[in-house]
Every structure is written in structure tokens, then in C-alpha cells.
Image (cartoon, rainbow, N blue to C red; front, top):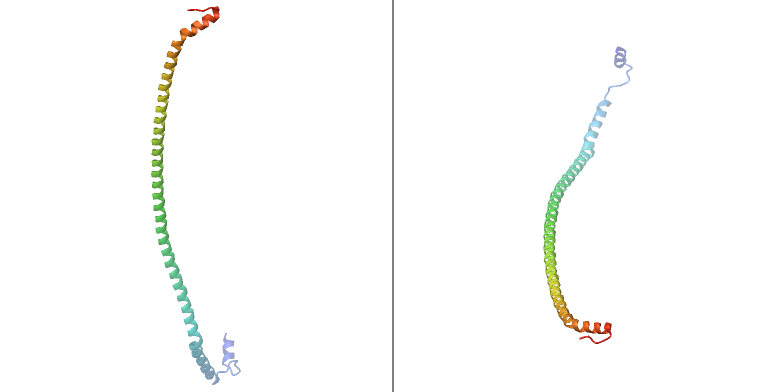
Length: 155
């Protein structure tokens, strides 16, 4: 290390520190402030504006997502309520239909029973009338059969 220091301090050094360093420092400072004003500040402002726009869009997207979830929850609740009401109405209509079916079946059953009873009464009356007619005809038929069998007139 001491050799490096001795080379830098000797007259044959690689870097010459003379008045041009001040000119170069001046050019550097002028370009620094000029570029900072014309390039770096507008670029950082542009980047900051872009970040703000992205953050604003993200916040807006989050807000819209929250609203959509809230509305979806309300929509789901409304659908659930409508389905419940529809189920209740369907059950009520089904019960009413079953009651109407029972009423109609009972009416048809009663009507059928009345028709059967009327037919039974009519058949009984016809049977009794036929028996009376046959009872009245029995002696006549018996005589006719006996006459035929005997080949002569029976009284």
C-alpha cells in the first residue's frame, strides 16, 4: 500500500489535479441541475402519477368488489326468500289439490254408492216381480208340462 501512495504523490502520477477539474466540476453541476429539472423531476412526477393512478384504480376495484358482494348478498337473500315463498305456495297448492281430490273422490264414491243402492233396490223389485209372475205362472206351466209328459190333459 505504501508503494501505491508513493506513486500517487510522486511527480509522475496518473491523475493530474489542475484547473480543469474545476471546469469539469462546473460542467457536472450545470448538467446535474439541468438534467434534474428537465428529466429527473418530470420522470419521478410521472412515476408518482402512475403509482397514484394504479392505487386509485385498485381502490376503485376494491370498492366495486365490496359493492358487488353486498349486492350479491342482497340478491342471494331475495332469491332465497322467493324460493321459500314459492315452496310455501307449492305446498299450499298441493294441499288444496289433495283436499279437492279427496272431496271429489268422496262425492263420486257417495254417488256410486247411491247408484248401486238404487240398482239393488230396482233389482230386488224386479226379482220380486219376477217371482210373483213366476209364482202365478207356475201352476199353468206345471199343468202344461204334466199334460205333455202324460200325453193327456191334467187339471
